[in-house]
Length: 428
Image (cartoon, rainbow, N blue to C red):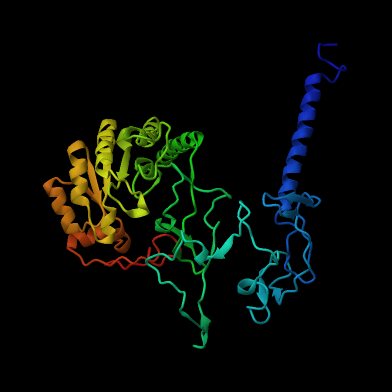
């Protein structure tokens, strides 16, 4: 009998392999079953109800102690069956259910509802999640929107139902996966000034208050830099001609450049060289995957957008222009974001950047076709990019060639939703 053999037909290696298969199957079964703690048993929406546990069967209820001292049982205890005022269109399972009476009372569609615990929701810190706006001085109604407080509530029958007296807000609304967004130093004194948008029930997007961020760890910075490189490589692999590093408008690289938002004391903060380190490593990580002839970068030196508040923007972006020059990127894209609000800074941007960057310089923001042609002819810019005019004029090149006319851009639809404000502009 050979070494390691238990019998003439079974050896230790076979036994270990069989045990691994049994363990692996058991692990998969356990994980799938544990995944049925949330959302099961399924509600069939039928009367009488049809119990649907899925496979494997849902596990026995388990009580979990939350950080705030509350307890939750999962799977949730079975609720009393809901008797819906609706019937299936067909007899097979999964058929659409149609209301049989008043759709707002049917319990499905626009009148659907679900039992909720008779206690307030809490944030991960154990505080009330939905609170009156007046108790949160760091938040407010977006400046471009009307404050509804004090306005009348008028029904479809033109009858006044009351007056809006209070606004409530969900303090955890924008948190992803239960965690705060990341930033260089977790500076959160200006949440109401940030450009964060949420999808409303009508399919449009509206500005909402930003969620407080937290400072990135060194490991998270390294992971993020690697993500930039991976994203760039994937874009080229997918067939893109090139990639642009977005270091403008308060995006993460822009935050690291600002002495107001970046108060780190490690190698990614402190003096100007330290604050440039994140962007420097992002560029180098991408260039390790993608040729410089396919990599551009966008900056907005004096932008008030997203409130980066760099007290030494001229010094910062003079150094950034020199750094971009040293890497030989295909272009430097300067965005005059303040022009959106009627206070253009392009002349000051060019004074800051042009003497230190000899490559292809692209401009954007508040530039009409006539000014664009003049700036290119005079050598102030090598190219001009159009954003909002292109959304409003899908045939912009033809309109420029003809000297107009131009559709005016509408604010609605830019951040998502339906085709309204995005693909419904008329062509010539």
